[in-house]
Length: 410
Image 1 (tube, rainbow, N blue to C red):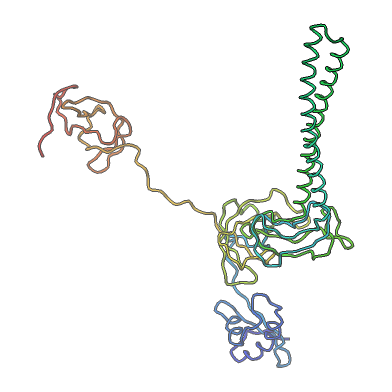
Image 2: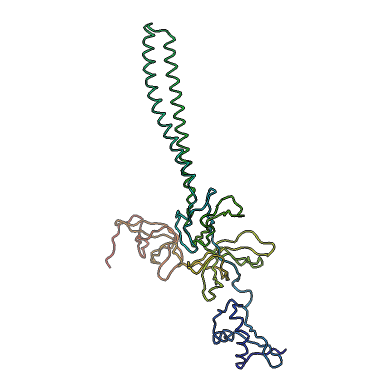
């Protein structure tokens, strides 16, 4: 077999080799409906040095070479997947039979939306029973209160008659016992009402648990149950019992996760810009940045997992898609103009001893300042002056602190 550089006359033979692989989608960068002209143009694009393997006058294979990036490069490229930080398989809190499923794959649901309903016959019956028990306890409360009021009056009369020595002490004791008994009965009935009220609340919660709602807004990616099936939060999924109604993904929480070889992890930093390419859309460059480097390594693969934020939200990005990520050079902060440390005054306003005369209200005050560098005809004052203050230009040697002056006309 002889390997030589390809020529224009080899185009037909190269196409015969490429076409079956392209049509079978055996090479994911090239679409399966790629035309002959497009394929040959890609194969022989500038920068590709194309070779063919020839045997007995027939071309058996072809490949191309292209230059690698110079040196270690300013980026690290890795493959990974699209993952969702918020994804939930929604189940019920109780075991029950599914009566209605209101979701389908691809449906968008809002937080709190009803996804399915379970058989609520027993829950409704239990709620009705607890409400009846509460009503009975409240009716008894009214009867006991009426009896207690009568007992209080009877005891008061017995006390008055006893004090006048018209009835024996035994009669007064009987009235007191009747009053105390009804007081205890009222307290017991109040507790029974409280327990019945709590029972109604529990029964209402059990009824509410037959309605399965979305825990957050997202898109349904899987429908796992049908009406008539049993569902249980503690089932292992065997037999005819399901563990969930469906799976919801928050598409706003999508990110990339890639495994970076531990030999190159020192080139990756938090906040570092990246450029991602989905296997499904090889010509689409998606900007992103590093969220975090997971502080653990996979000893079997010698890799470290890296989380990457997606800066562009797009419906084409879906969970579990394959992605190739290039970690670019570290982001550079925008340069800022230097900030002046003080103020500028005419250079001849600063005397040799590092003082200036500041004018205010018709008089001047001598002030010591900290001069900086000279900028043209002006002098930088680092300390001792504030912006807006007026100084005397070229003060004479005879000028004294506190002297009265006037502003010269311009």
